[in-house]
Each structure stands twice: as C-alpha cells, then as structure tokens.
Amino acid sequence: MKRRKFIQSAALTGLGLTVGTAFAACTDTQEQEKKNKSATSNSNMEPSTPMVIATWNVPNATTKAWEVLQEGKSALDAVEQGVMVEEADEKNQSVGKGGLPDRDGNVTLDACIMNKDGNYGAVVCIENIKHPIAVARKVMENTPHVLLAGNGAKQFAIESGFTPEDLLTESSKKAWEEWKIKSEYKPIINIENHDTIGMLAIDKNGDISGACTTSGLAYKMQGRVGDSAIIGSGLFVDNEVGGATATGMGEEVLKTVGSFLIVELMRQGKSPQEACEEAVKRVVKKSPNYKDFQVGYIAVNKKGETGAYCIHEWFNYTVYKNNENKNYKSDFYNK
Ligand code: GLY
Image (cartoon, rainbow, N blue to C red; front, side):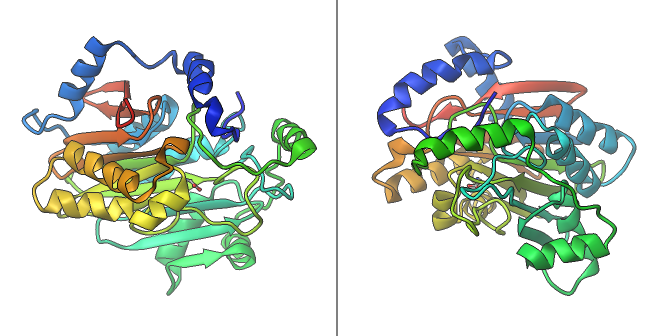
C-alpha cells in the first residue's frame, strides 16, 4: 500500500474511510479502546520489563527487538536491530529501502539512536544506505560527532563497511512518477498504515534505549530534514526517567521539541499517557491548522509503563512484553 500520500485537507474524512482497511490488525471498538488504555496507560499497572514499544503495526520489528532482549543483549542492540527490520522491508514506503523519494526522485533517509548513557548519534539526508540506524550508531560510537549529513554521512557509512545501493524501488518510482504528473506539494497529513518507525526498549538491567528512522515526508524539497533524527524531537531518552518518540509531521514535532517535552513531563511526575497527551495538546495549541496534519507520540517510563496519543484517529503502536506482541490503537485528540 502506498503511504504518505499528500491529500487535501478537504479529503481528510474520506481518507479515514479509505485507510480504515489498512488497520485490520487494530482493534477499533470503544470497548477495546478502554481495554487498551487500561492495559497500556494506567500508571497503576504492574510494570513489566524487558519490553519493547514501537510506532505503528510492526510486529516483525518488535519481535526482532524482543528476541535480542531475550538473548540478554542491551536495549540499544534491541532497538537498532528492531527498526532495521522495517528499514529492510521494501513494502514499507516510509522507511529505508523503498522509501518514497523527494520531489527530484532521491530517497533520503534520517535516523537517530540514543543509549542509556544519554549518548546520541544521527544521520540526516543520507542516500544509498539501507540501514541509516546502524550508521547513526556508528556515528555515536566511532566519531567525535553526533550528527552527520548528506554526502559526509554516506562517505562515513561506506568507510565503515556499508555497501551503497539504489533505494528507489520500482513501486516507489512508480508512485513518484504518478505524483509528478500534478507535482502538487501538499504536505497536509498522512494517517496511513506506516510512517516513521520509532522504537523504545527496556532490557533486563532496566536500561532504556531508543531508535527512530524514516525516509521523511514524501516528495519533500531536496534537503528537507524532519524531526526523526533530531534529538529531543523525534526521539529522546533519559535512562533515569524514560523515553519518547514521535511519528507524523516532522515540522510540527520539531517546533515543539515533543519527545524531550514528554520525558521532562514524566520527570515531573506525569504518567507516560499524560505526558503524551500534553505534548500533542502543545502541538494543537501552537498550530491553528492542526486538523490538517498528524502527530503521534509513544512513551515509556522507567517502570515499563507506556503511553500513546495522537491528533487524529488511526495512529497505532505495538508493544511486546510478557511474551505477548500486541498492536493497540492510540487514543486521539480530534474526536
Ligand atoms: N516524522 C518524519 C518526518 O516528518 O520526517
């Protein structure tokens, strides 16, 4: 399925109907929503770790991360290997190989990773490298820097042993060619099956790490960078408190530094759910046109309690804990 189509705001209601079938894995009754809320957002729940939480319906990615944790490896290894599953999936047109290109046909990727010590590594606008998250980890571990961009990031990846390849698949090329007929740049909203993959994990030692990876807004201007690789916006982890990660319209997440805000709100005593809700409300308050775009957050605190919230319906997320891998529909603001 094509993701990240640009649509006119007037089509928002219709799109909700269109994409409904893409969420067969999600429960959508009010009853289930209540159960989901109590299962994942209640501060009184029995905490459970190790655990993994990721944006969207990505059971293969969370399974991979869970397996890594079961081997006794770190949360950092888990989130890196978990999101790599989506980066390698050519059917996922918003991450890694097969990601939809910019308006000139270039697939450019953004990714970042944070570990338990608050270290951060990122790449932005990297081309021809299927696993930007693995490059981001190498930036963090093997360079004196935290963020490499464009050609420099690609050069560093090649020097680190990554093999360059064409990331534009036939399917993404076809979508881009169809888009070019009108070339309408209307980055209004996407509420489709997938967007950015953000993942947070807690390992057997109780340590938290996070990863976030994306091909960004489809048909963006060349050189555009979104929130996903920017510390505090697309991802933030403080091992004393918890972590948060974002999906949706990167420009809006950047302006409100949403993931950092969520972690700081949790530090002040809010539950992950309360913190995600406040971060979404901050976006809504600052953006009169909030009905035209989607932003969603997930968060976890040190106890393994989780939260999720978004502006519009249809955002969902996956939690793997207690040997169960489950997809949940997120609660949302615009009811
Ligand atoms: N959230 C992904 C992006 O806007 O690039």
